[in-house]
View: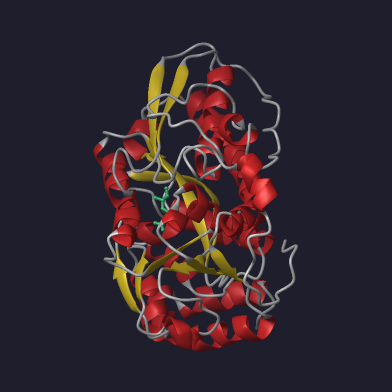
Amino acid sequence: MRSTPFRRRALPASFILASMLTVTACGGGFGGDEEEGGDNGGDGATGTAGASGPDLSEPPEIEGEVISDGESYEIKYGIGLAEDSPQALSVDYFADILDERSDGRITVSLFPNSQVGDDLQMMNNLQSGTLEMTMPSTSPATSIVPELQLFDLPFLFPTPEEADAVLDGEIGQSMLDSFEGSGIKGLAFAENGYRQLTNSQHAVSSPEDVQGLDIRVMENPIQVSIWETLGANPTSMAFGEVFSALEQGVVDGQENPWSTILTSRFNEVQDYASETRHVYSPFIIMIGEEFYNGLSEEDQQLIQEAAEQSRDYQRQISREMDTYSKEQLASQGMEVTELSEEELAAFQEATQPVYEQWRDEIGGDLIDSVQEELGQR
Ligand code: KDG
């Protein structure tokens, strides 16, 4: 996937021409409208990003049987990320599929930017029936399905395609099945992406540079372990609180994929970024179990298919936005440090103890079988 070599270099502000064409008046993201959410507006999955942002693939044509007969209802779909993130754009596509294939019976209302709660709250709301759908990272969902902790291990997946094979294969399916009876139904895995470190203090190119930094991490104990092992001071925090925690200096840094750093405008409050790729983080597309069980079989099938089609599109545009976002961040003045293979190997080696520390908890057999599948054993 990577188009740039793993050479360490601080990207200069040499993308200025491109950025002048693409940066919006409000100074960040992909040039999306500042919609309040609540209605996806139906202006297509590339509506916000296509106009002045990256050249994204169009969503595939909507095909399949139209199911006009049945109840009319609304699906409220809450997410943590911004309306121009790949996550939100894929929900727009999901909404379009359901609208067209249900003949307008099923409407999807998107609530981005943690408007209706953070990942843990939204999962609770699915269980209590006050929200129908959400798409958290797997990390906070480990409180419900502990096996998902596998995906918190550092440097597990060398490429996104290898992650897809595990997530869409037997292992991923059995994890989705494990939600049964929890009040949540897992529909499919999408992509959050490779996580990169940003901070306000100094450029980072070695594990030593991380020592002493206060880093916000997701609500997950393995994420805490990774940064403790590196000698940083990690703090778990909900995503919706990260921008102000960075702005107010409550923490020095955070880690997220490039597109999230850009669309959440973390570069406005962080000067340094490093391409550490320390964890490949999946999303889970989920729906309230009771709500889902109350639907007709035809609608259940429709929703499952739409979730898988939106997953495929989400992965595609997430990957298209990745390098673009890194370059945008550099052009907007962030000092972006790319790591050499040796520097990345130093991070990998320094975080290796996390595997031993969490092996029993995650399940040694599970880790072994995935590493075998990946040719690492
Ligand atoms: O909608 C997903 C977000 O809420 C969150 O999971 C993003 O990776 C994330 C983080 O750092 O919390």
